[in-house]
Image 1 (cartoon, helix red, strand yellow):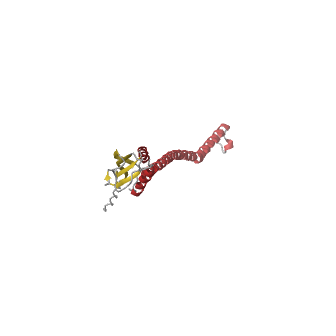
Image 2: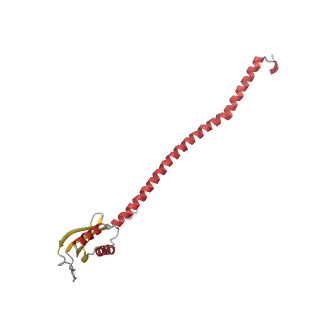
Image 3: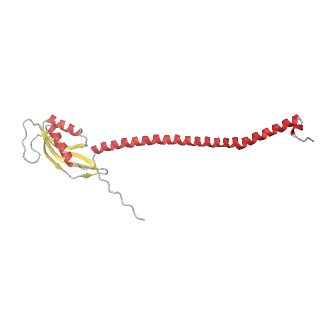
Length: 202
């Protein structure tokens, strides 16, 4: 029986050395390489998850940017529509606009009387009975200017006739005037919304 490793045959020594090498390599793989491989797989899974989340967040950011742009556009549209159909009556401003437009068109306003407001579902009509006179083409220009105002103006119940014989009070008809008109001028404002009901107590 051999007393030491050196006394063993060469083939046996090689086999033993090979086995030891395999065992050392296996131990090194088990204690060092295998944990690193598992950690790599976990890191790759985490990277994939973060990448997917990042892609999702980028999509959300794009959607958010589009929504913010849409909200800003709707806000601008709302402001424009508020000038067309304001939230307030703004009667003084409307009356001034009617008279200023008449002056610019060389038309005389003889009567301008407020009528009862007419409440609709979403807006309120603000009518005025009106008597005007002047030159025919100047009157056409006046109505055209009213139609081009930023605030909506409707002219209804239009009746044409001679320049004299209508209106309130005393005034002088100029010789060059050819026509007079009675009509109802209507503008609009948004109907006030009722206040939100108070929350009920439980």
